[in-house]
Image 1 (cartoon, rainbow, N blue to C red):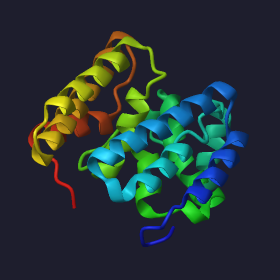
Image 2: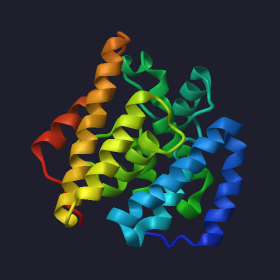
Image 3: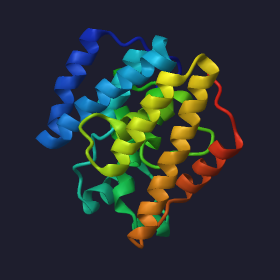
Image 4: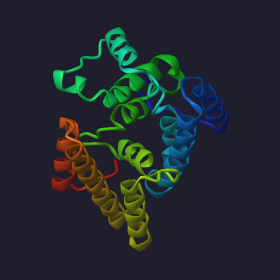
Length: 216
């Protein structure tokens, strides 16, 4: 992995946008493009200097989503990714781990720490998330083709809050509250389904409740 921030040009993004088609179905690819659009919009609010890197992370975030459970487990074994007993019960979470590993291997020009970490944590979140990671997580949740009720509610909550925010501190508080709501929604949904709640999601929720967000 590269140790410094990379510079991502429009030409690089165009090439990446074309390359990730081979990793996705049509519906998933359309979602990926929507996440790229949302990452751009969120980046312009919070990290304007990182907009193109955010767009790259968005394009890479679901590159192993199409894998079935068997292939996910084989990919974990290939990269030495440790899967706990509880994680076996939640195979939908595998793609964040395998996606980060495959992105670093297959797209080394984009393998800087922020991009790879954003791919890794875009599904569960984690305690101490960077703002870069938050924006990819949130872009995935609220992109404009999402019609699931929670996604629509969260999207409206965020943009209503942003419209009323008067300064950067208030905009960060909108982001913090939106992240908390997203975790609340996820936990409630999983409990309703009788499904496992990932520990990273619980720890992320609690961290956002206890901490303010800072950039830098």
